[in-house]
Image (cartoon, rainbow, N blue to C red; front, side):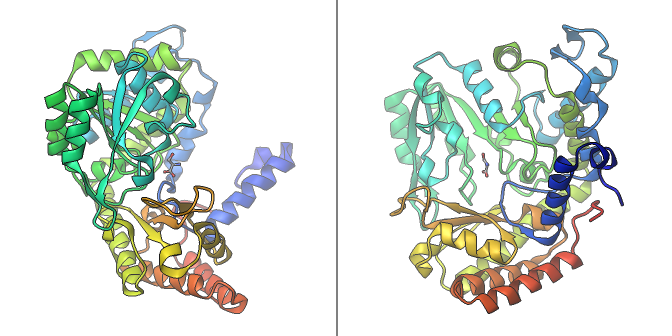
Length: 422
Ligand code: DSN
């Protein structure tokens, strides 16, 4: 099957990279918890002819002509997103999760205003105010943390005290490396007490919320949810902003996305989001979302049985964070490299109160969204976890690593990526 016939003919170098990546994805196991496999239909929309079109504005209110079909796909994406998350308003134009957060901050804040968010070393994200981002030149970020990294319990009393003292305009929930659910009710009550807007960055867990495998922050009164569309939600690379019910907030968000922050929306991606949201509305997607959690639990069991410390004591979502340095004396970077050698991709990650630096931290972060799309169930996930531990324990034994790599490849053949031809 010739996957990219025009590229093959016209540009051999790019073609080689595309085919190389097709093969890499086919023969390895993807455990990066923010990655997934978009369906063939999502990818078709994403490479469609809509890439040719400029559509500044919103459906029915554009700056250029010729919008019959762009309006149709954007309206579909908006309506489906609203239904999926039980929101009254949706903006589907942001190019990614970082843009979604930027647009949200600029919609709600004035320069110098304060955001109270999760400490970055405890699982927060770069866009929640890491000093390397430009955001910190404009807004003030203050933090809440886990009370105990071994249980994952957030210190809500401290959160309240900081909120009372700092008077944030936004109380921000959400994370990129926190394996537990949050007490949304408590957070909303703190936000209301100090007059802050309650915002959830659901980039990682949007698919789990959509699939009703975990709680929906809107059910507890959160005002805004930002997200990516390509992680657990299994859509194209992109972003999403949802507003529970305030028309005033929705108007501010739309103005902030365009013309505040972005130019012409990527309509091919908007169409692909519509397809992905349609998929996520199906009962099959609910089964998928629930299986992600079961698979993560199966991996948790194996790591625990081997005495490897898991931050927060385990997982209640799609990801796990293991202290491989503390438990096995291997750095996160070394662990990432070793697992790469057996065909398992994940990422090194700082852990709460890490004794090591961010470039070679103590932990690894991994998760089950992609392997669940591939069809793996608890039994296979436990096996994968056993291989991981085995490889980490025998990282200098080349023969053992080669043996495990063969097992990984065998499993990949048995569970091919859906809708792929390689
Ligand atoms: N890169 C994403 C992640 O892996 O969590 C977040 O930006």
